[in-house]
Each structure stands twice: as structure tokens, then as C-alpha cells.
Length: 179
Image (cartoon, rainbow, N blue to C red):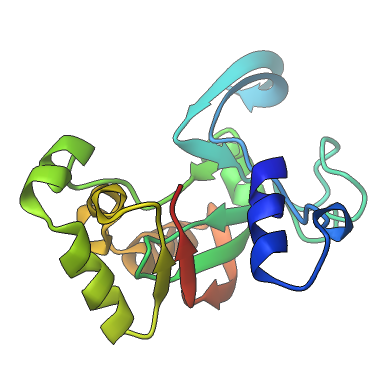
């Protein structure tokens, strides 16, 4: 996080020490948690790989400020697609041990993307959509191109309709920083 703040400090008129973290999401984690299994409360080690917590409103493990609404859930889009803020649900506690996806998922490996796509063309395509990208070189861009991911709009529609996370806000990309 420190390096991100330093980069932003160089781009905007603010000192990096003045920038605060709003929310942090782990998407590869194992935690000891209490869940109901076959009608019995049990202590489980829940491993989330490519997933994140989606605890529902009132869950004892939530900090007080999140308790009324449920766990904040961030589902990022690609460099060219929307990202979303959602919240966890009581239904997620029953269906998925309080879990939901973190991201839309790849449909193309990094290696295949680097061979199939041109970083320069991805940069130009994003620019045509009004999205600015900053990267050390064009070779660092292709493996994260919008077309290598499932559509985030569809993924969010599915988790919302399944009841495991509820959509709060949709964000469209204006700029991308790729390290």
C-alpha cells in the first residue's frame, strides 16, 4: 500500500502520509470461523481462494460500522469494465459460509494473453473508451486486458440474484495504474 500512496502522491497534489486506506480485501485466506453445519454450530477453518468474506448484517464477526448492512464486498472489474461495491447477506452465511467471489475470473491465462494481445493495442482501445493507463511499458498491459476476464456485470448480476451479495454501487474505470 505504501508504494501505491507514493505513486498517487506524485500524480496528485497530496502527501502520501495524508492518504488513508478505505477498505482492504484479502482473497486468499484461511480463517477459523463459527458456522452452522447440519443444524449445529461448528468451528471451521474456512479457506477462501479467489473469494472473500460476505458476512451478513448483524454477524458478530463484523466491526460495528458494518453490522447494520453486512460485510463490504468489492468485486473488481478489468482495466476496461466496471467494478462493484456490494454487501454480504444472511443468505450467504447459510449457502456459502459467508463467502462470495472476489473478481470475475479469467477466461485467458496470462501467458496466452501476452501471446495473443498487443499491449499497445489494448492501451489504444482503452484510450478510445476514455480510460487512461499508466504502465512501465506496453508489455505489462496485455495480460490484464479486459477481454481476458469474464464480464464483471454478469458476475455481479449472478451473485446478487443468488442472494450471496447485494449490489450497492457500480464504478466505471477512468484510469488504470499497472505496475
